[in-house]
Length: 303
Image 1 (cartoon, helix red, strand yellow):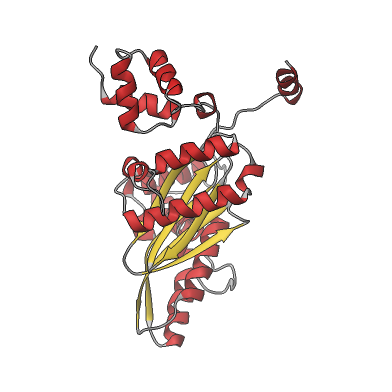
Image 2 (tube, rainbow, N blue to C red; image 1 turned 180 degrees about the vertical axis):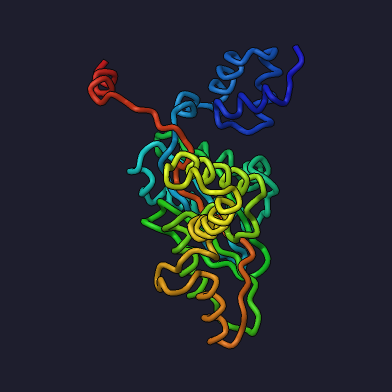
């Protein structure tokens, strides 16, 4: 039976075992997925196969700068308790160090990198952590900035990790300014960094909604189309102020925007700052959490 890359990927996701071992298992099992899992377990490679299927929506988002390289990662676990475990936190920091050193192109490449300070791949080290801690653990995503000045911020012990990347001139220390911007991102989670990033598609959808709202308002419905267009244009400025970081009101000083704060603060220090990029990871974001019946769970454990 022909073994496809999709088969290998599916087995890897099911067991957490490396791609080469998954390929060997499928070859030895003539492509039978269940037999391949059994083969891996017999080899001691998938002792945690059952754990790998459990939902991991807790864990930690972590941001740091290592030798000038900015890194933000999210690593998930099943419970908030494990997310605070010292061994788990050390594993997360090791993943960040691996990202900084290895410069992986994507998640697949990261999982095949040598985990920081070991001869194991990240996949193998992740598997070790599953066995040690007893929960499903999964490295979910990362971002890396090799250029410019990166400033990290971690909120609530790892609930949110933010990495801001700046272009700095004049030899100034942009750490405080970058941290203020990162805290703003953590708190308000803007959809865009700057209004220039808002696509025409998004603007058209917003205009459509605003015009529909006016058509449904008895006081506004009878106004001429050109008047409505002017009103919509004014309301789009409010959209930018709510959804774009640089146009948002700065939370520490509501008399200026984030962009005005950034420019003024840099000028006072004798330099200039340009926001190049920023990434915000919130642990468990977008992962559907399984709702367990506590009484049923206790009954299962008692069996």
